[in-house]
Length: 520
Image (cartoon, rainbow, N blue to C red):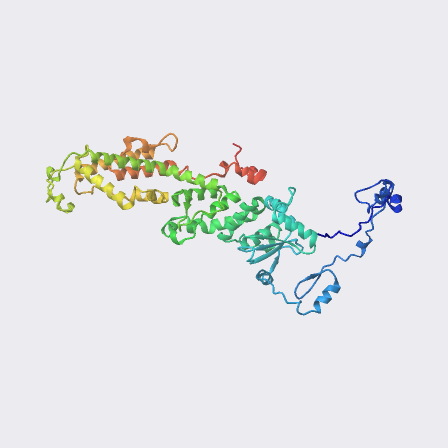
């Protein structure tokens, strides 16, 4: 069997290396005889010689782009060749974002601005464009300073965009996107760029709330406060309490825009008196959800820009009013139910009442079986009185859902107003009036006089805890508790800006010098 190498003669290896290899190297190599090793002196001479980079002098860095299809080319000759081939040069239609920007005018807050702020619900839907100076925003706002780079690097998208624009397209502005209210954003840019001549004398409530939200978001409190305070004061004096703060609002609160934004405005602008007034109003007239979040009269939650710590404090103020009222009602309910459970067997027939004399007050056939006898002589309660009191209580609980959490989540003003509207279960000049009405009026006058003459100190006096001041009628008792709570705790409701330590952090030395911040 023959192989490929049968009959073939292999060439013999040379006995010595070629002469030219001996001249090029002083070191023998067996691994790769085709590549000589250059000696050390020759290598040093090559390293010292400067590289030939003269070709960079004639290198054209221009990118030639087709004006029809926007395709890029590295030389003018290639672009010309591309134009001469119609099948390759196709018109590229602009996308929807480009068309939207073309139709959206650019509002130049500063004609020499280096930053274009695009505004809209999302980055693909731009509704407004503003040309501003990035350094102005950086100096006025710590938030903008951080997002634009500052001294901490360029970890934010806005910082990278500004840096890229400075390097690649220095004649064009950088672009960032914001999702804030366009009208409020334009006013803020004008204030920050000192374009006061373009500002109006008044600002509507909704725009004020949007501006306050922006101040809280971008930390613009000090820069924006002087102008915004003037607008807010005029809006407050002219409209707020005249239209929304009184009984007219309570009668029609479902059809009126909520005013919880004033809490945010007063907080941002450092309006101490207004902040206390609005926080008290919210604690009294706003209900809460099952998650203990405040809800406005039209059913939505408080403005999202209001800090959580403020919402928590307002809720504590509400609980300060609600706790004694709810506690006393639950005690009354337990006491009445316990008394009902301990009643012996007793029928209406065992009592004696003059049916003819009290015919107008006797409703059904069961009560008409009563015999002529007064059930209350002004002394201790009788079984009939207890039955009437218990029936009245149970009817109120069932009708108004007083045993459900949904009732106690109503506004404090609604809860107190309901208990004050309850009528006495024992009718005047009717059944049981002889002794019960006298006892009720005498006892209530006594506790009312104690309430009016008591010292107005919350920590030293809590009359709703004293059993001596409780009436035999549960509705009179609840009425008294509501009046006492309103007197002794109503004056303590309302937040103070000086009680928030974070005011120093937000306002710095300026806020502290106004007396609004406490060093405690």
